[in-house]
Picture 1 (cartoon, rainbow, N blue to C red):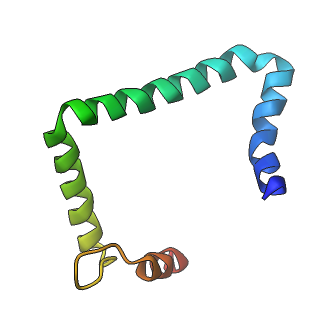
Picture 2 (picture 1 turned 90 degrees about the vertical axis):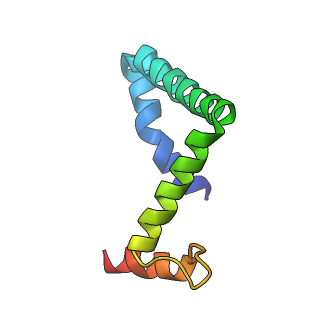
Length: 84
């Protein structure tokens, strides 16, 4: 797991050391600001969150990734990814 994480962060560290620290910092700050903003909006407007959840459920049902109860099936999702 440590090697996997090191491989994921290697390009970011390389960019940081090559003089792009301001861009990397701005991208990280923007990412977390957008995450917190989306979280806050979903808390403040529950209809938006419910609508988005319904959209995703409809999307997954159209892809035949749900079981009989309407739950997302990990095995069907894995099979779909293997086919892709």
